[in-house]
Length: 275
Image (cartoon, rainbow, N blue to C red):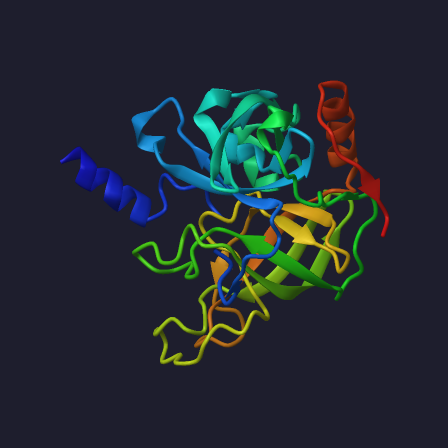
């Protein structure tokens, strides 16, 4: 049956926006980070989810692939994108895609960024909006990842998606030429009974998984260093403890700065900071 097919497809991650924070801790903090729900123009994409961040009045930042961008246009109608804030469902009004993002070059990641505009009056009590960092982090710097994805990158069944989790990890690579940032962390939560892991999630050395795409990399001051594009899972040096590299679009990269300039002209609201 079609419903069974959709359930299986979602389980193996075929129709959920790729890449909750494996080994992260459930949290009610970071109110500006929200679950993004996308109903695309195809039944096979119905029910997809990503993560987004409210960065200003009527403005939400996420990944371009979450809203099916290609060459500056989105295949998703803005009314088919919504998020929940203070128990209210808020619909998008328009989508601003990075004009340099093309599906065929999606693995590059440096332009995987989009902004969703919505009615600013729909949020009565807005959160403190994170600002956009206009400088790169330092190699080895500790950062915070927050997302709504599942807590096990390699599980066949979706586990934990739709729950906000957060945790810390460190910068392992800064590619200023291509405008991307890499972190490395677990691809499974320590509480998941796989490979004889019997502990509880620690909130450290966190990774990313399905549903975390579009989520922010936050500085110690709570501002945005980058947006999650994706990342491959592998078992690293210790074959018994799977780890992964997560790839973020740097907010301070030239491609991102050009995009933010365009978004400002098109009505997006946000602020920059170097702190």
